[in-house]
Image (cartoon, rainbow, N blue to C red; front, side):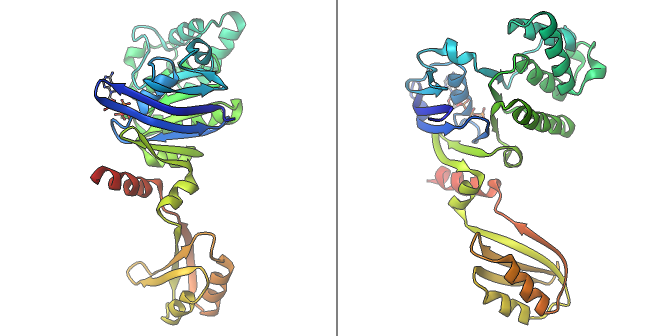
Length: 314
Ligand SMILES: Nc1ncnc2c1ncn2[C@@H]1O[C@H](COP(=O)(O)OP(=O)(O)OP(=O)(O)O)[C@@H](O)[C@H]1O
């Protein structure tokens, strides 16, 4: 049994089918990426998971507890970072942490400890006494997240936490997310439009589009839906045509061509079907001088375009 089970979940807003019989699982200790374009149904799914919205049909089980039947129980598991900022603009950073800590029932020494820890996580110690209204959007978002983890939730749900913020705050949030997962074992659900973020921090992924799950699995499995090929780029000196002919004959190599402009040999290989050792051996024999080698996997961006592109055009 998985930690979080989304079972045949459907949500209708009058005629609009926001979620259409959605099912997938999330395992404990994951950083799970929920990807999808605008209006895909991500926030609707998350709002149901948080008990803020009722599903029309189906259910979500959190540690075997039904969100639809017992949302008071399932809410105990969750820390939620919404897209909107939930801070008190006229209060200082520290007073906001205190406010949220007390909301979660923390007091005394534990409250102080958690405030200290959350302050550390924001990376904004030098601004701790300043009013939030004087903060940049990125700083507010960092504090927004720190407030949501004051009670050390077992599950942290982050709804597009990096939209429209500066690269420094964005990196801070990504690092912080990884730290929460690693140090406290927090299961994290992370929604984003930014494929590269999801690629960087998530293990398992679900891609939703128009209320349907169009792909679900590990990054590797999802990439394989589109292609099982990788590209090896070898920057070389002293190119000779015979190296292309020889490499093309090696098992697991689908194609090979030389890019004169970039002095790069492009080798298209079948993932898991080729031997790097064989390629290296032939390159050495051919007496080309290797300057660098990189293995380029298809990225989630291209996978996503391929999957949703077809879907959207149909
Ligand atoms: N309260 C509501 N009333 C009516 N329709 C709604 C409501 N909330 C969401 N919807 C519709 O449900 C669909 C899914 O919306 P949702 O906000 O879940 O998408 P999303 O994937 O979170 O998008 P975004 O990335 O833009 O936040 C959309 O068509 C949206 O217009």
